[in-house]
Length: 335
Image (tube, rainbow, N blue to C red; front, side, top):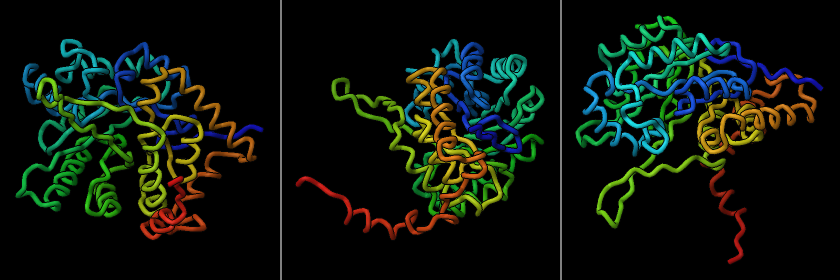
């Protein structure tokens, strides 16, 4: 049985819900081509960091090392050495233009910023270079004890507003789940101009090297257990906000993709599994996903999309705290 696995994300028609998210694999033309051949419906280029625009290469190098503790897109073990990494927009725009020339699938540019300002004019430059959409990757460590949660969140809103005003192409916002009211914040981001939300960023925490007595970055690739967080919030938000939903983190198998689609995801983002198994792993995931729907006689992806969201689930409380006690009671241990 043939299943229509097409989907729509940010207004873009995609052949399937598998998107290769921002990573070193999307930073080279040869691996971009491999990702498309293996079945990626779209790709997100590595992020152009705000720091890369505002500082010279040595300053960026310091921030690059620091940022490796919090962002999977800036880690020395996977990202090329600094001399090969983009220290400004020129190299990035060249990659974007070549990707558009060589790929037939949508190419999404990525901006990683912390504050509103003139640097968002580069979003317009990305649009002019041919980007089909822009993913704004926002993250800020709130270390200022005098900054309130409201001030921090308003900074996000201002940033999204600033970028939205500078471009006409679709805008996705990749966020963390760490807000006092995640659902409300998502609504505000959409009202500020986000056409889609990517749930969620994974931030790697620094470790301590006991031999050298130094702080060191420590990257741990995701595992399917990391799927639970985006799955939960995708299910909660489906039907409650007018925006595309992309689930990121923990997507390793076709079953992972199926779960997220049933929860309400329009697309699923993959990074860790592709870094671990290579671009060809996409073909395996695509086959597993399509087989699952075909075996259960679904006619299309849309038929199942959101069928197990909180709004549609027979037990909507399963996504809330009220299910916590039930989980504890039903857990069995050999002790």
